[in-house]
Image (cartoon, rainbow, N blue to C red; front, top):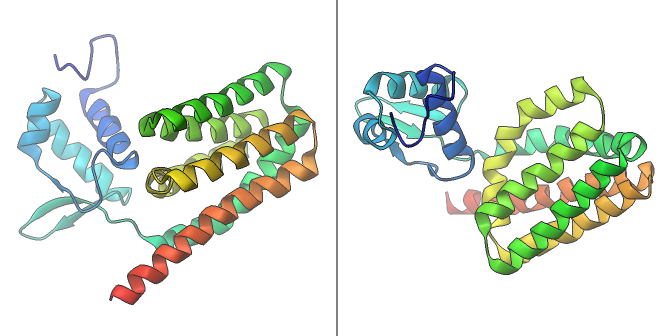
Length: 225
């Protein structure tokens, strides 16, 4: 059995391989434009080529992998234009989630949210990028969970992977990571104060700032063409 998968996990092997590869793409371990070699991946994961091939096909259907004729499978490039469309929707959803969370969050969840913010600060000072990516996701996931709105959570989960790949790129720059920390801190404070209006405003601003950076990237790449 592979070091990546254990017998304690009852998912079919093809699903385990798919989950691993999807996570690797979303977090940037498998980078945009990187070729996916079935043999190497199978050896690394300690599985046969069949579940790897099935995972690649499924990832293609989700838009995370592209098949190039006579060349093979590649991690899909980041598409800034598509992301802008997603962010327009996400801005409103983040604002709504923060507003609802301010009204419905428990004291225990508030403490957990504050702990995530503080841990983000510590990991930022340590330069632990992998931890920053994880904590950023945990922060937003907790706010959506605290909204107590299952439909809202479901919609956001569908949008998450489209945003997260860009978020990885965004968060690795020190100046931007510091801004994320300050914005997370402000949003957490407003939610703790049960300020629904303020939490909505800052959550939307948080996404808008991210959106501005995507626009800059989009203009940069357009100028290069």
